Length: 75
Image (cartoon, rainbow, N blue to C red; front, top):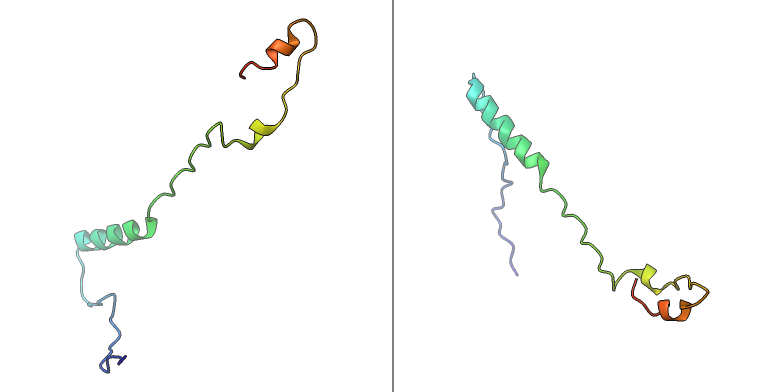
């Protein structure tokens, strides 16, 4: 593969000296502020009950009459 021979670095910002109006300064500040903020991070997805590792822990079984029946009920 051949690389291009006439590579010039591109300047991202063109500087012009002179008197800028307040509107021009405000426009530049607004553009730079918007570029520096970026996107907000997405919230973490909520874990479903089936994927919850705490689900595999054994629940406390109640002693007494009907305790064995209550052990099979959903929590």
